[in-house]
Image 1 (cartoon, rainbow, N blue to C red):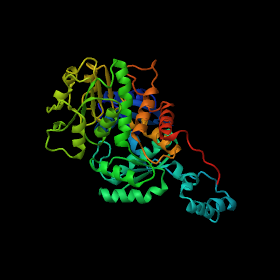
Image 2 (cartoon, one colour):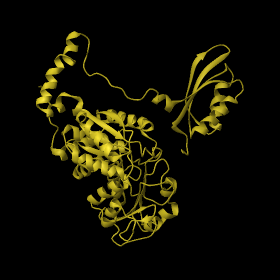
Image 3 (tube, one colour):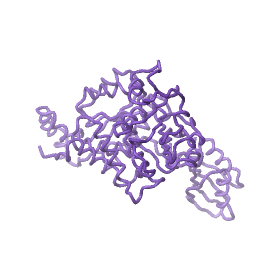
Image 4 (cartoon, rainbow, N blue to C red):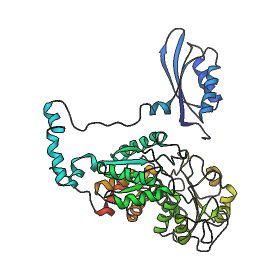
Length: 469
């Protein structure tokens, strides 16, 4: 739940008020007295006796939005006509569409784009399947695949409810990297069915972006698809998060003048994101890491370790710490949370080492209040847009796939992930770097191009050209 008014809960109230007098100022006062924020006020129709006005305002949540409407309705002379939720309006009818890239104005153009001319192109691909990369949408198309089992922070809500999120993902691919992505929402949570379904649709895509598939199922799905397919498979909840965390931590450690090889890192969360973040931090040189799940520290002496937790126990916590998260945080230089809200407080952050770095990434409510953390930490990052240093996967996945598609890569390697993180960190210049700016804005014009170039080079050099048939 938002603690301050947010555009995510933005409403437009269409109403009528008496013309003249203080009617307009009373509307603004009513919204503000209810704790809302007026973001726009438009007169849509004017007469001698009545004004029709659209009042757009931000609220904290749906209940708060209703309270604002009630406050407006209580203003003398006000008649409410319609209340519109602007977020729902944006999603009405879906957020993406397919458009033709070629004109179809006459018989000649139709004959080339479709039958009979298209048959020549189909036969060329039948003779050489690789030609599909340059003669079809495959060269620039990604499938965004989910089973609806771990959607945002909403949990297992199913494929239909996942569709608005996957549409949004596709829109981000297009906006930030010019990639045509399409949501594939599967009505199954059976690993074999997921793998087989993606395998048989793969010929139409240049890459697979797995999204919001719950752990530990997501690990097996990704592993098996990587073995089966000749196109890159990227699980954004894992590897996109890992890239952004490593990039931000690289710059945060520069701010506090510490090195990744020497700091003590405590992590909360051993699921899909936590596992991937851990592996990339270790690959980047981290040596002293303790990972905690809801039962406490992961260590070799625990008798409940599955394959994923066993790997963590074998590669972290060399001293065998067996206590809880709060104990693990004491004396740590870095805290990285990809877990649950409100599991730490300001006193826990105060018990960390000097100039600690806190990444509280649970969304929408972080592991520790950012305001409390900032009283003791040198650098604080969250997954939220209303605080500095937002760790947002859109910083990574558009550029990663742009580089993969340009290089016609067949796989995603750890070297590519490290290269992407390094490029993302480098977008922040030494002159810009500071406690409140360790990671660039998602709208920074250099983000996607820098990440794409790094991935492309790691995948084998410059983008391959596409010649005429």
